[in-house]
Image 1: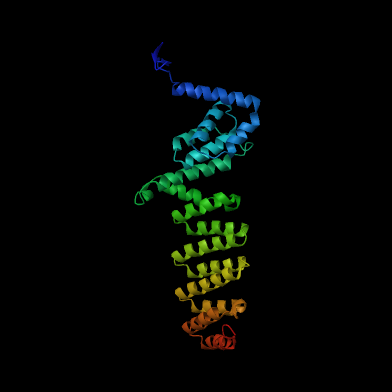
Image 2: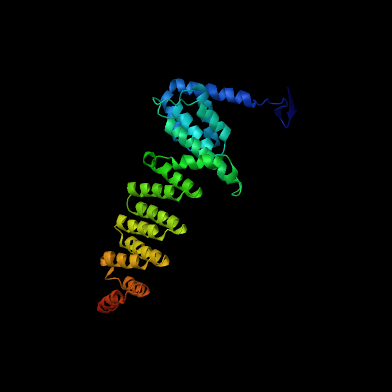
Length: 292
């Protein structure tokens, strides 16, 4: 049915719009057709695509057509956990087999830990200790096999352990990342450990982490910064004998640096080690003037 308007036939019928269930069925049909033609390419495309609302919808539709694509289902469960969709994530995890022959048990255990942690952090800080999730999450974090974690999971686990007050576990995780990293990466993780230990009043351990950061780097600027940070931490903890020992054992690389020598001289005086302070003063006097 139509009407005449300005020389054109205008349709007056109301256009029908497909409802949500019909759209879902249509999507499944399209995905099945793609699967029949390109069975591997579509699954890989979904795994490698930027995860947003559209790609998540496609994943769900694809898994209805191909329920045994467990790797994609694991990826979907992981994203749902991070999005806070815990019930949907739990449903997806239930559909993933846990037998050793499938190889998903460790990742499923990690996702359950991650899910519990995110839910726990959503509570007010005062409410967390009384939650049933609190002891469960702490126990799981303590029991984590540090060596079995990849870099991403290890960094996440360290942040989780730090948030739960598990200092030693967080330090172990940061040290593992430092051991597998190189250069600035290793220095970064040792510095994070040092900061965490210092916040808990463990001055000697924090200084050792700064020295480990120094040893892990070939950059003079990083080695200098880490060396001075270690000494500052020891001084703050009134560990003067330790500070003097570190100065004597590790100052060789910095004896041509006026600023470092001046700070070492003052620190030696603060440690009541006058001969060592005189030693640095003499070295300072022997250095050429700036610009000469």
